[in-house]
Each structure stands twice: as C-alpha cells, then as structure tokens.
Length: 208
Image (cartoon, rainbow, N blue to C red; front, side, top):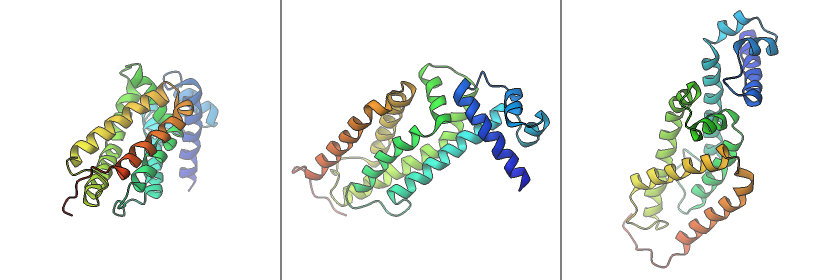
C-alpha cells in the first residue's frame, strides 16, 4: 500500500513538472526534490525519467480507452446507425485534450524532434492504435450491413483513413494549440458528415 502511494506521489509531481518545464528540462533531482523523496526512492520505483514518462503516458492512453469504451458502448457490437461512431469522435478529442503527456509528445512530433519521449509515445501508442483501428473496422462492417454506409466502402481502408485523419487533427488541435477555437467546427463537421450518410438517397441496398 505504502509503495503504491509513493509511486503515485512521484508520478503526480513528475507530471506537473513535465507540464510546466518540459521533459528535457526536468531532471530526476527535480522530481526528487519536489516530491520530497530521496533520489534512491525514485530509482527504487522507476528505472529513470523515461520510465516515469512511460508510466504517465500509458496511464493517459488507458484512461482514453476507458472513456471511449464507456461513451461509445464498446465492446458491445457497433450500433445500427451512426450514433456510436459520432459519440466516439466527439469524446475522443475531448479526452486527448485532457492528456498532457500525450500533448507533449505531439508537440515534439510536430517539430520533428526525434527524442526519447517520442520513442516512448510511439511504443505505448501501438496498442491504442490497434484497438481503435479495430473499432473503426467493425463499425464500418455493421454500417454497411444496416445501410448507414455505402457498400463500396472497404472496412480496412475506412479504418486506415479515419485513423490517419484523426492523427492529423491531433497535430492541428494540440501541437498547434487550436483545439478550443476549432472544437465547434470539428463537432459540426461530424454532424454534417454523419447526417449526410444518413440522408443520402443514393445508398445502395446490400446483403447483410
């Protein structure tokens, strides 16, 4: 129990310091001093600063997955209309906006800084990307089955393109710090695109 409290205390302090000063300008000495822990205590719980950052960003991706699963009713089958994917798209960016370590890595990605935190972020993100890709893939299959999407849309391409688009928007929103000013436009675009699918008279019936 005490060990868990110590780790949480270290992580909370490191997160505040990374947010305020950045990863590179925060040292293990800084984290030890601000958390009122001996430096040896830090190394007992973590192998180093990179390990602390990995724990923080892993926690953020897990929080995002949990939030998306709750808002979109995953892992239940995708809905027979576009409401599930609309909820997912809206909630996704809001959750990313509340993930400071992920945003920190996106800023470095935007500036093409090949560094330690980008390597860590890319490694941790693989599991999330696979999970998200599968959701889009499955949502596409069911969308075709219930005529929400046209039958010529390919699930693999749908998942690839949507994920690529969202990753590009992450840079626009968070690396360039434009989420708040772009939020209403993003939500309106989701409504426009999904309503367009819903009301499209040219949809071709397909077999379940």
